[in-house]
Length: 106
Image 1: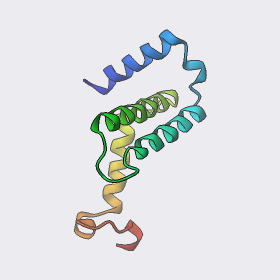
Image 2: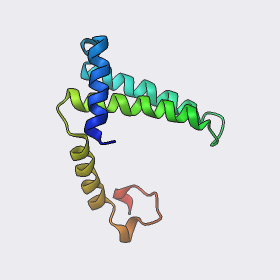
Image 3: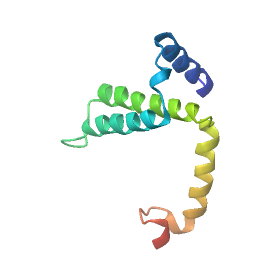
């Protein structure tokens, strides 16, 4: 399923429930953080987590990310590709391969 189709389904769900009134960029950013915390909670006591729980929480995080991008008029593919380009420049393969060092310390 394409990102556009996913966004259409999200918009339809929100519209049917009249939830857009609550979806300010601030509220959506808060919701991303809250749901990210719930995703992290899946791994609280070790690296092994219930995959169904992780999938559900990850879907919540992604849904709010899509909604925030939509609220700000941003294209998800475009902003991810732009960021990947910047990351590619900051972390050249010959310096960063196999390392977790921050770019300013490579």
